[in-house]
Image (cartoon, rainbow, N blue to C red; front, side, top):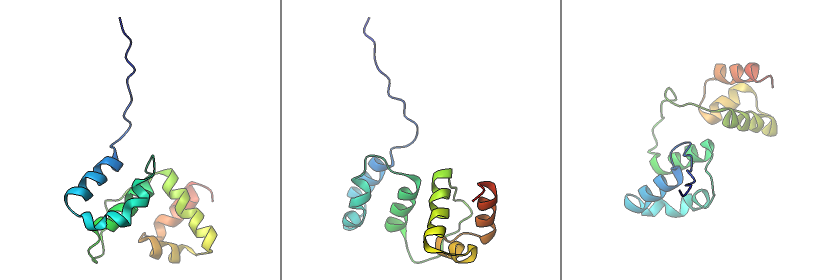
Length: 110
């Protein structure tokens, strides 16, 4: 009996999803996301950036339905340290609540 190796799919293949969407709906934005789609694996922050590039219409988007994993939270907090921003400035830059930033800093002891 032949053994088959099963590839475990952990989540959606965002690279393929965005590639197909750009080819079908908006080929004019291909150049803007080419760098992201050239990567082997897309991080959550990459997906958010691609989503902003493709679907940004100039209106403020509700942050109510966004979620962040630990990796993205650490990237945001590292950005704060690197650019020497306070919580209010960081929250304004990433369109977050300053209370959310404070909670992340307390939770992850940074």
